[in-house]
Image 1 (cartoon, helix red, strand yellow):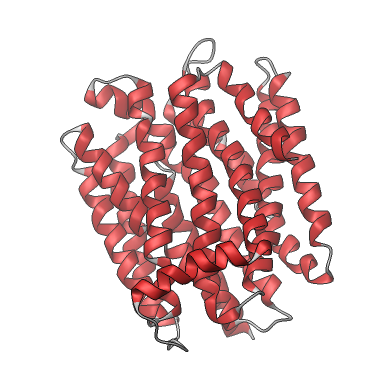
Image 2 (image 1 turned 135 degrees about the vertical axis):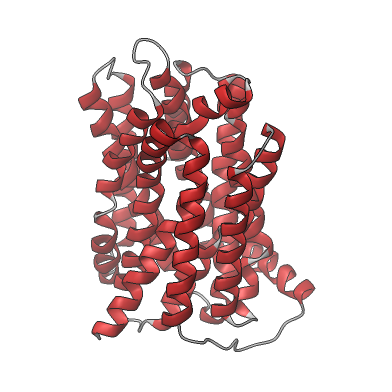
Length: 372
């Protein structure tokens, strides 16, 4: 039992360190803009470019986990994202950096291979706990990555952050090589039919569609807030640097402690209650943001409410889709997470195309109210 728990804890650590690659760039936007002598709005494009790559990786690569050996796929993707992080650190132009960030996103799908693998390795009674543990690592990686990249970027430059991410992924690959068990696929399906089945499941399984759309809208709220916050805090009256902005990610990371508890309690059949509670937390967070003025205490409180609410929604929905058709977990996860990240990418593009740091504080509540 201790060995299994250690495996899940390392899977959580691995998920967190790899998914962090998607978010390192957010606090670094002002530094990248200065480095290439471009505007912050133009530099901010790499945030949605990275997530667009991730969405494509989810759609075209994750389904293969149902028909090929999972350990080999996880190791190959981890190596690839390490390589592209190294290339990003050496980028001589912004265009090169954008391409590298797209490829980083494309290959940083390891957490979405690990999550269904964890569901497969756990018993039905322990599945909620296992998913909660792995999700806590993933969520801490998402949120703490901003604080880490902000600190490293402020003192060593933005290129050092990408180098650090590459080294972390190489370490993860070494650990996974020795710890992950082999997992032979239970079915062999041609790739063309495999991809058609993803669309078929999305069209024919209402529970999958509902969970996917709810999470996409929730993530669009969270994603737009974090991008707008970077611009908002970097301008008057705050003029915070990348390190100071990154520290705000720790407020959200604290909320990730709720992930194992949510996963464990979800087995009691009260998933709808958790989703409703998560929605109310997100609504409450933006009530705080709208009236916070220049209060840092209220900003931190709002971040905590926002992230804990989003985590509750995501964990419950992922547990639901994993229980529908065990032999197709990767394909269900593909439909779920592709929709999820397309929601975040689309909202970020709207913010950078039409919004300003000040006005952006009010875009997310509109999205949230539209489905709550």
